[in-house]
Image (cartoon, rainbow, N blue to C red; front, side, top):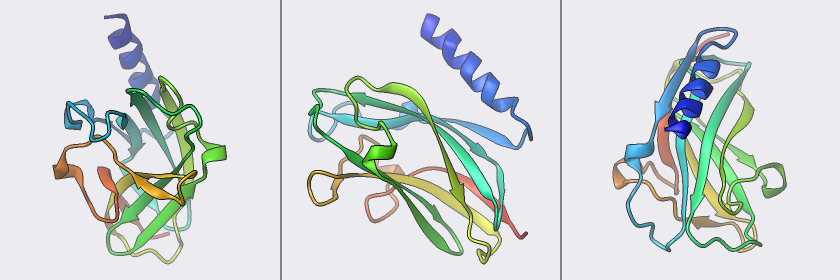
Length: 164
């Protein structure tokens, strides 16, 4: 119950951000019961803008969780994609994120630039992990197949992109 209260407070604080143009997405019911390799890496919840603007930055907050027996030496590169009328992949190297740490359960924030030449439209926001210690091989994420996009990405939500 204490976790639920903290979670609600966190979500409320994100929702009351400076522009009110935010959406809270709960993915807890989109994870599988038993991860493929016994280890699960998940974005359980995230907060992202409803609308983003070409040529500007946007911020995403993700509640990452890692469950199961994790290799303490594992290092992951996290990729985020915007996929719609155009596509962009953003990579966050292992040294700049804590995804995959033992017993990870915290909110992480990321800022990404939207290319100025991106066409307006609806864009899917997806995530994948790659193992920095294994030639950047994809790491299985513990989501239901219905969220699978392509190239190892899983759909977390969507945003509407408007012109500058």
